[in-house]
Length: 260
Length: 240
Image (tube, rainbow over all chains, first blue to last red; front, side):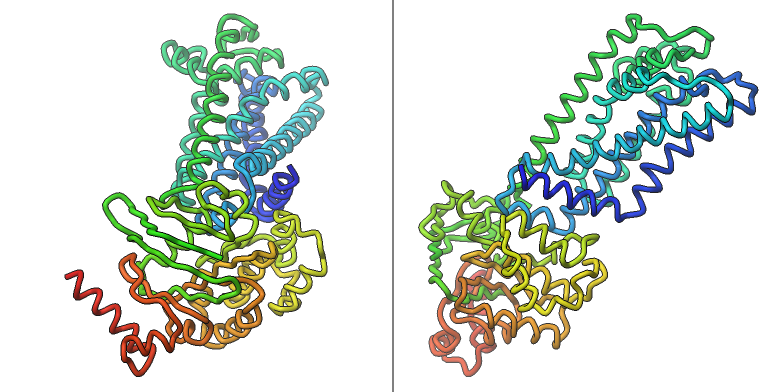
């Protein structure tokens, strides 16, 4: 375990000394939160999915996809520079490598969560409206953990499978998917068949149940409720999270003794 | 120390190594010499457990590569062709990171390595800002952190200027006799200057093994370069 923790410390230093993390992982989600919040204010609060309660679960999901990008970059660079290959010849085990990468990803995700809530709190104070309760904050954080874990593992997976030129491109596709298919910025509930499709993927159900927790309202002005959409939504979230973990472990194991 | 018997490695239809047999004694500085694509790096990767062999038997320090890879990993280390260091970490942090991986908790041994490689002046500098020569020194220094019985140096002076190269030769000479070193290179003067014994590889096969003098005598050549060219050309002619 000490080797995994040692590797985690190295990854932490490597990532936090690169400005990319401050721009993408911490800065960009914050900009999106403030931007859409301001947009709603300028339209006299007519865009209900841009109200803080509806916006926060979406921004959180969106920000996790940048954790995936960051991890994809570091893993692919570590492979490209032969750094990982060198470590493969050491007594480190597959679990040490995966733990070292995953833990740093989860830590970045938690930082994003804190940042989103602090920004949300400041915005709500400035607007003179009530913010989420502590219980709601904790429940939302806990609920979105599987999506954070899925993104973290996908980052390691893409970094393992692709080089440092291709991995960011693949991650960008997923970032767009998270924003569009998660209904972070658009009212998917009014899109018929497209909504049905989105319910089969993990992004929309995660945001949907997040909005149930924050007592948000959808574009029709109806409060999100823990209905069948929410209940069935647990299935794709669990499925995709499990799949991302499984594929990452298999790919990483295979990569250790590659024929390249 | 290292015994290789009938080793073959195929990448799909391409034969990277073919029926290669070799013995390397303890404490030797053994050179693997060959042109690009001769199979030097493939051989080293197999010995470090980074690539699977297709067939053959390998014993390292009486441990069987197929059964005891975990134990072998504790006694071997490699400085790869690529510098393979953590770029955003300082020189000191790089050394500490690898010392922790190999559970080397002796700060004196780490300091000893810093002294050998003259890394004092760049200890707090981030690795990505180092010159090529220093990066290479750090890479080899890292490989020594694990106190390996066997050290693989894959093209250790590749891309370095003549001064940095000679500087590194001096360091490698200091390591001679303290551990078994297997060095790959396509620089003849490097092999000639450093190695006790040499194996000349071409197209995945060993053409000749011995000391520089033995190889010169066997081929009847005046210089080592002439002997090398003669052996490789003879092999190329046979292949055609």
